[in-house]
Length: 179
Image (cartoon, rainbow, N blue to C red):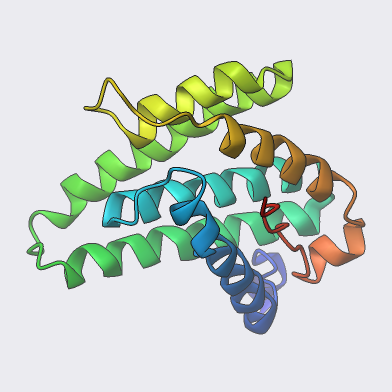
């Protein structure tokens, strides 16, 4: 019984599920795929979900402890979701850990690269990084400038969200401007 006092506090599962659902819904907005150059493929959807998660994690890194704990639970849900998706694609049990390791490496590499560009306020560099990551084998990738600008705007939007909303799982990723 006494050991239960030292357990890491977990957020209410409903909060984690609500926030994760909001993030995944944001990554599925058709405009990203129809107008901002993200391919509507398995890897394109992975890239867009990674972008949304990166924006959320950058915001929660500046949060109080409860926001950071929520972020950890969200990242756990994200990687569980990736694991499930890989298995649904027919990858056998022996191949899953190798693929998960690769996807995790890709995710954290993107986090570092995008963070550098966002911290510097360099949307041109961010656009180049997005093009390299979203179209790794295509030298004539579409311009990712509008997606980079949206990311910078989304980050500013997230920075303005009060801590209580973050802790309650009420962070909303803004939709891109149509036009």
